[in-house]
Length: 368
Image (cartoon, rainbow, N blue to C red; front, side, top):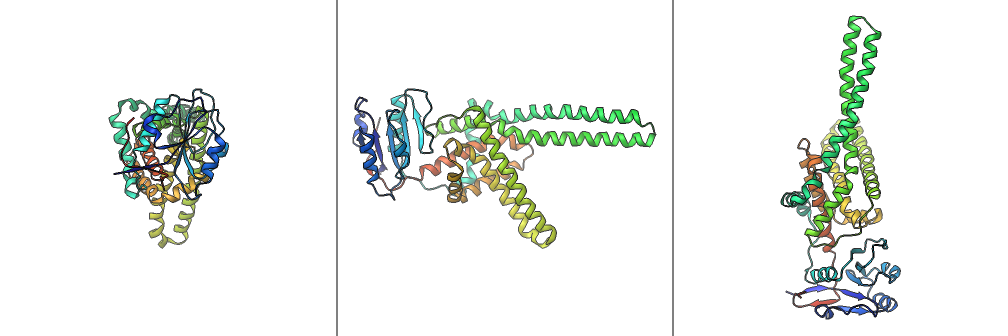
């Protein structure tokens, strides 16, 4: 079976020549201007072009804007910051890793877009990945560990504060029945303090776990032979996760408020609103978790919306699977890492399915 690819190689004249095993399958350019003119001359409806740049000093600003290019690989010998774009799928620091990735791409056949079933089974595939790779277990436990630390951090001072408050009331009011009431109030305040501490720890544990979860995304990418993207800084990772969490929370509150009011003023509507609540919850969970690999692939808000629209059935399947898993008490923080790995599988499957009309045809797999 033949495979298809579309590789354009841009380098300067002093770079090493293209390896013999790749020479027949690539279009070589030593001038950015000529390369730009060539790609611009291709039909604008063509997609899936891969651009390989072996000199990071070459300006690629114009090339990034070309719709024909969907993937860019860069060979960089320095650690200096690179141009940020969702098209940059990998920055390599050694030539052999770059060649290995191109060989993998050349031998890869076109796959179908992820379906509802693919989305539904993705979290379980993520769980299996973590289970068979002990090196990921410590990172997978980070959300649960952070949640536990935050819960004790918030609840102990809160409960102690409620204790001091009610203790002052007990010393102030000596009547027996009032003191009975104060004791009941004390335990109620304890419960409220623990509940609010639990809620606050729950909401903050996931954003604070973002670096560990993104590390799992990269581990899953390596397992799928997918090149890693440039890493985010610690603060940028947490801030992005907080923004997504806030969007999810406010969107959930707004939608559930509308549905609940509908049920209150028109009770028969519960037949429709209850399934809608379950479905919307699944979609919001999917949006929250799939954000991790999408963000590492440098998808902005404008790019994510079409992505979720295009793969809506896979998104719904993924969200419903996660929702069923989270029905298990305490499963959210323990199985969240499995969901992140599953989301990575889904995003990479979608990205690999976007290979369209090829420029080159290869009749037999090549070897590096």
